[in-house]
Length: 344
Image 1: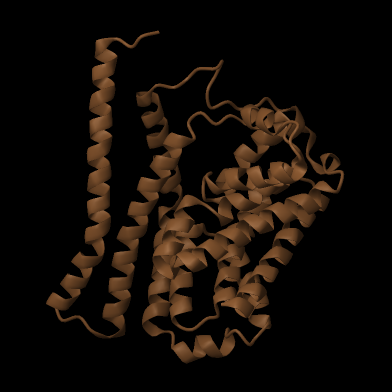
Image 2 (image 1 turned 90 degrees about the horizontal axis):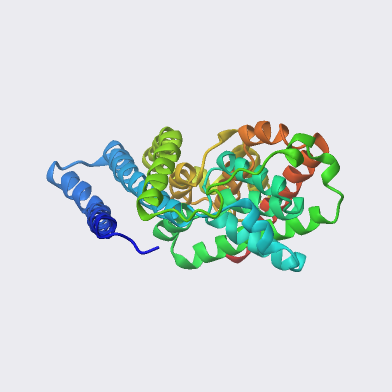
């Protein structure tokens, strides 16, 4: 059906408005660093307190801008994703390829482990194999658009590429190992019987305005849920940045201490956060001398081994599968941390 002139005009105005907003977003992101540093120089701020305040303000503005912009953009891309389409796409494909595709899909879905669980349930209900859906659930919080951009900004693209590769490999290998077992018996029956949630209905192709509205609603929901955690994470990072002595961190979490990775992994579990909240803490620890692999293990454990995620997953997975899932992820994180300490 041909669009009417009124609809075309509305779409053109909407595209123009989106372009202006994107330009303003980029300008604010670029100006952020220069504004706060210039202000600090103008008032002559020095010392640990001044450094901590600058770290907090600069990172808060930058991360919140990244959250809003990237969640909106990815929301636009995901407006036509439906679990049954994923199942149809995976049907008949080799297990290894299905696991890789599921992990890659996890990399472009919401960055909080808990927010990925509803989509995980939808995939199981649609008939996607359990092991494949678990690969998705592991990759979703570990590797996502926010984590990649923030890691590249803080640690450089080489380390970011290694982190992304490690996260996807962990998801694929854990999914492959769990696929060797008969997992359906350890999934709560209501999940297998539940109706599949649809993002679109009856083949409806959303218009541009509908996609924008859906992305705006998702951005408001996700950012509204995590912004407090972001500020808490940045505040902790600011304290570490300003007052924790470098030699203390290096002494207890250096690359020569294999137990540092274990301690960092265990410490990350009760600190439930998402990538946007934990990366500022990781940045401060890394700058203070914590070994690279230990930092990565701490980040991964914080976002992928959370107590709230375990509570939510228990409603859909029975204890044996829940234990296998968290055990496999824990072993993978420890392996990643030790490998990174040996290489970087």
